[in-house]
Length: 175
Image (cartoon, rainbow, N blue to C red; front, top):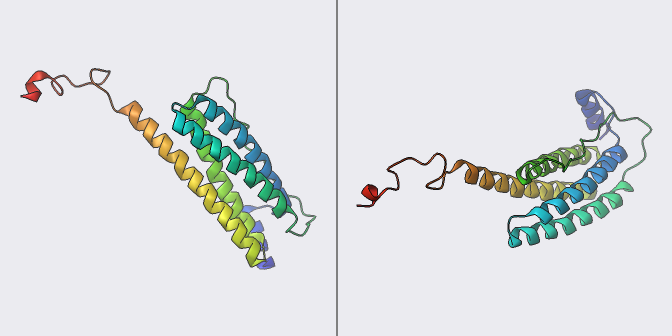
């Protein structure tokens, strides 16, 4: 297992410390909960708001699981060079911008969890981490679907709106 860690350290150009990765994931998940809360508050429909609120509960469960995972790794003294993602600013951002940010954060979590799984020598711990990565990937797919749906709604003109082609929905076309 140390060969894999050394290979990853060489590939990434830094020393990977599982505790630092987990700490990074916990901080990122906590920021994500804040963003989910804002998205739920601004959700365009009631079913979507309830879905996002259920996802908030799942995110809180993920934070607890990551904290439990922290003790399953031996402590290493090697430093890791890792920067936190910029905290999402809610100021002038649209709901779609915040959804894109969440999608990006979910994909970042998948990457970090895969790195963490490669550092574990315990198959049980690896299985837990891979299951968490799968859940993060499913969340990313959910948010990507929302982005695609909202993007499609913005690109598809509804007659007689901007981009509407004359004659397309006219009386002559209906005959």
